Image 1 (cartoon, rainbow, N blue to C red):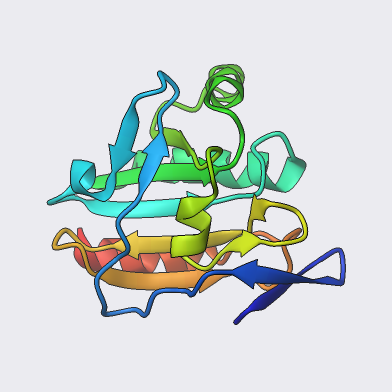
Image 2 (cartoon, rainbow, N blue to C red):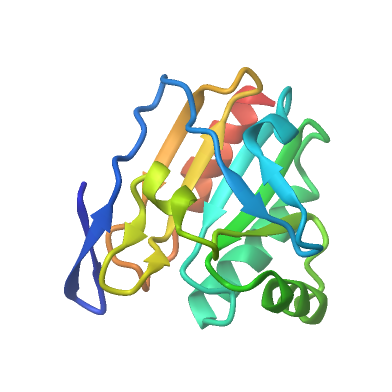
Length: 167
């Protein structure tokens, strides 16, 4: 899919979405302390990339809180990361205010390279499209879900089922 909608309006995605079963694209994202994080930092773990437009919006807030709650029932071999283009400082503030401790927030604020590598950078908004990617411990992409309408929540059950198959 090379488009999504935002409140019914067609938006175009930059980059190419990686194929399930192939190698997950590497990335460098920025942690809340401004340190870099890359795919290799999660090697050997099941990595869940929960991509959202902005943590400061109602649906994104609800989604990341839901994944934070779900994380408690998952194996310690699973890492959940919320990726947005919000500044790392804003992510840290939001996580603190929301009590989100089981999900790590990482930022793609610098150049949108993550969004382009995963084919989810919305050209018109310069934000990430709502999506969930599950990377297996060996670095292959095991699951991919792009939500067609940005204002809708993802299919949590399908994403969590993919995680449980690997954990």
